[in-house]
Length: 164
Image (tube, rainbow, N blue to C red; front, side, top):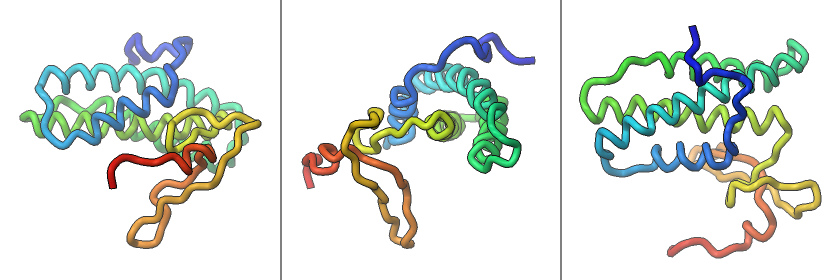
């Protein structure tokens, strides 16, 4: 039985905003207070409850052998399992559990964008419109593979970053 937040008629917020919120939580270097963790837990569960049916509807419109749809549905299954995880013991355990929810939010946002054909700038997390100038982006890991591939607006690629 699904909770009321799983209503597929409820549109998800901007994927950029959802991704930013989840990424912020994942990137925390110190343990947040229990109430903050609890609030993020509720938010992430609600976001997943809205994203899951949207992605399933998008996948239903694609051919059964569509690889991006199959991968998205595997991610949906993992997100469902994470939503069912019981509260963990201790603050550290809870933070780790909620981080897993946040990772599912980020992954489902990426799948939603891919399935809808939306290209997001990896630097500013804003849509790359059809007339926008962009360049490919591959952040290379020490192992030689791309950690995150995509596109960035040309003006974002040349914008100065924080202190070096």
